[in-house]
View: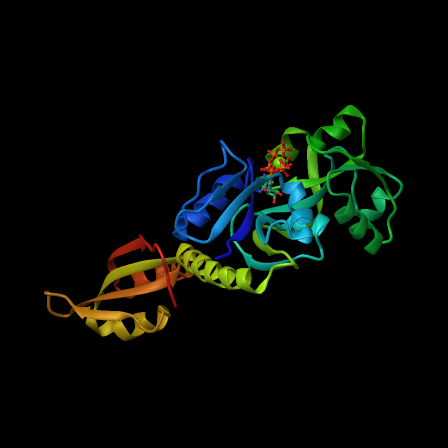
Amino acid sequence: MKKIRIAVQKSGRLHDDSLQLLKDAGISVDNGKEQLKATSRNFPLEVFYLRNGDIPQYLRDGVVDIAIIGENVLIEKGEDIATAERLGFSKCRVSLAVPKSMQYNSLQDLDGKKIATSYPNTINAFLAKNGISAELHIINGSVEIAPNIGLADAVCDIVSSGSTLFKNNLKEVEIMLKSEAVLAVSPMIDEERNEILQKLQFRIQSVLRARRSKYILMNIPDNKVEKVIELLPGMRSPTVLPLAEKGWSSIHTVIEEERFWEVIDELKRNGAEGILVTSIEKMVL
Ligand SMILES: Nc1ncnc2c1ncn2[C@@H]1O[C@H](COP(=O)(O)OP(=O)(O)OP(=O)(O)O)[C@@H](O)[C@H]1O
Ligand SMILES: O=P(O)(O)OC[C@H]1O[C@H](OP(=O)(O)OP(=O)(O)O)[C@H](O)[C@@H]1O
Ligand SMILES: [Mg+2]
């Protein structure tokens, strides 16, 4: 039987979360510290540990079938490559930043200026769309230092917490795109491996769904049960069990964590007590 070949970043910000996702999907592989290729013991999958920037070309050439990669890298180097799944980690944005001291009113202020970046295609497309022309200075890392050493007037790079910009006395002025890790698919993938991909995606979706959701339990006075059920859209409908104490019930349900925090006050107003929130390992629909 064929194996699906997946590219995972060899080391860096995506490496650990990518392997954790495979692990949570029940797929065990070695971590690539020793070798550049590892075969799973319990799923038809081979992992190739590669540099991020090289992955779009490997996908295009069909050397690997799928990859876990930052969407920003696909937009920069692989617009022709399809995305099968957004994976919810390594969230960041690609932004333009200028020195804090610069008076910035609009993109027009960058016309004719020098911009340092590792994302030339992304910035060129953005500037062209806005009718601005600038000189690009392409560097591979430590982009944010460029204005301080007189190399550029502005930078275009990844921003997450904003602390790198802050430390370099820069301010974010335009967000070009928002990114997260995605599962990308080679245009050359064959039928047999595509079937393995469907199985892998099914597992990944169960993991991602579980990560977004919580299993919650709480005690509710019987006369509030109906009202509380309205607040809690469960997978099908919540489980309601009588408590030993008369007049009280226990409600169990699954809810997206974000939604839980939205309704918590309303639950308490309706007499909810002893609210327990627990993680879910897998959620298969
Ligand atoms: N500060 C950050 N916060 C969140 N996600 C980030 C951050 N920096 C980068 N990323 C995301 O993680 C990906 C990998 O970043 P990382 O810095 O590890 O690799 P790289 O230096 O771009 O590539 P290479 O593998 O060639 O060394 C980026 O493409 C981006 O999608
Ligand atoms: O907004 P922040 O949370 O500060 O994150 C942004 C920084 O993170 C990335 O660099 P990284 O640490 O990956 O170093 P690198 O340039 O060597 O890839 C990116 O290139 C920014 O410099
Ligand atoms: Mg980096």
